[in-house]
View 1 (cartoon, rainbow, N blue to C red):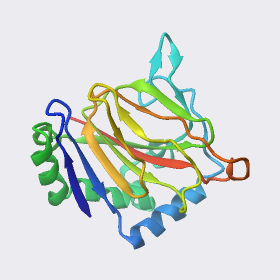
View 2: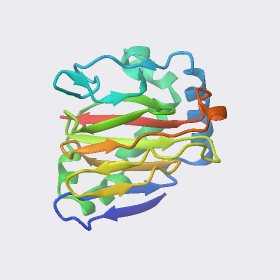
View 3: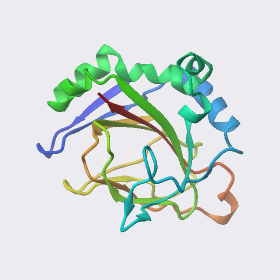
Length: 206
């Protein structure tokens, strides 16, 4: 893992971790992602973990799966490679680096609840400016290499910072930061084949 504390803007610091998962962990995660291809659907849910809205209209144009719906009970989570591997996020090494990046990292230590969803972005998909209704947000980006799309980068609106979407990069920040995802652009031959941007999303709350 390579830790990158992004503290240029003191008001909106965030943590990046490149090469977050090992090759073995990535293989297990890909196996699970590929098994979900027939389950991804355009998300119209706007309450709870649902997509953010503006003027009662969804800000997201993407496909999504809620892992808690597939694994509703605590004992079920062991059957998900993603819900097993993600425990690395609460490792001492990650938490200590998050605390060094932002004072909010101390708050992360006392979170006791989390939920996980997977967003999939294909051609023309994007997510407009919004914030998340939780305490902390963690993204891990996956895509098949070589990358077969343009865009899909994350923008922190208030600090005017762009975070490049890189495979196996983890991004961690307080959920109240305004952020958006730029539109995905793909050549015709790559569309609708699972070759877009996967965002494994974890929300943490108290």
